[in-house]
Image 1 (tube, one colour):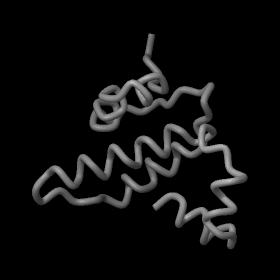
Image 2 (cartoon, one colour):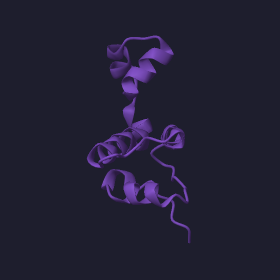
Image 3 (cartoon, helix red, strand yellow):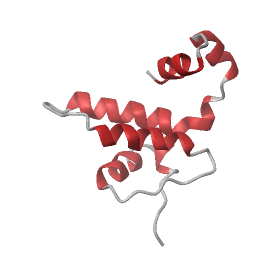
Image 4 (cartoon, helix red, strand yellow):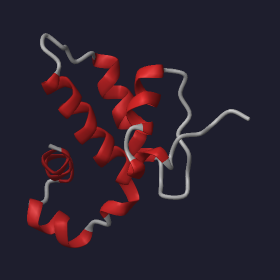
Length: 93
């Protein structure tokens, strides 16, 4: 889905994106997108909320050296559930 969005917004083919784009730059967004959709599909009657999409898209700004700060417990639990995404969690000292 992310590939489709980027392809449509930049008006280039998906093959071009795969060759030119460094997916590690948006690792948090890609992995959290996947985890979020899996979580929704596993829950009967779960709904996608508009603010969830905005929260996910904000993760596009988090690079491999950054941390992500949120007070939403559901995002924190999901992020900490995976070793790839757990490293992005900003812990309040």
